[in-house]
Length: 295
Image (cartoon, rainbow, N blue to C red; front, top):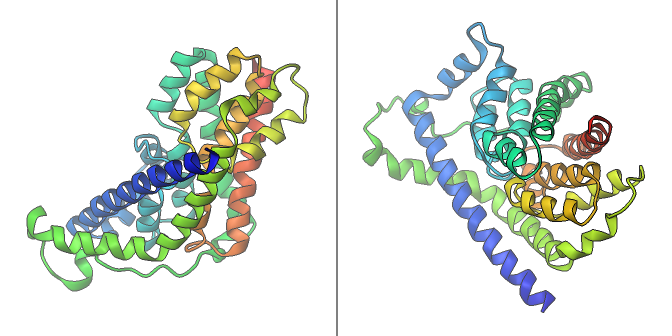
């Protein structure tokens, strides 16, 4: 039964991810061919609003799961957008959007929702500065620039005529990440299949300090969207699990899933990939402790 459940989860997640990745990559390719990467770079870097704030806002209004942020993230890198801005977007998109904040408000309380939003904003803006100070900007793999309108001089011909080229670009973006995606989804589906919701109720009871890092570590292999975790969080809360471990698990699982980590390996060198995972793990733990103190 566990194997059948894991295979079903694997098939569902893989199809969902493939469709999401291709659709988002297609849309991003059309945007790049219509405006050109240099316009995206100019918009992110110019104006009175700092680039990081724009990356934060873009992440907040794109309710993607952690894997679905990667096409836009790679596109921003190709366009030469500043490192801190792209990292801000990468962290903010799966963890901070109105759907999530509103869902937390409805399923828990408004105090929890506001506290969560403030913590995620501080994380999204602060972590990129730490990464830069650690020299992580040099740990990016070389990203090839392909498909931009300005590169081949071809004028915009309308969506219908541009669609074949955009589809080819989406496939080109997916190919190097396809095998890592399959491996990551397989790992996540297996773990998700063998760790049912009831298996997490052992965390119920007194809010001891070690439950929060444990919950954060458990959350990372559980590939689930944060919106999907909300009903689970409500059930765990009703079972007596404290709010700190619940949020640590939610942030860990939504911010750094096995498929995302596998796909980011095509863009990040090992040192940066490890820094990303550690950042999400520490963020999940800090958020869990902060929720415990605040609430």
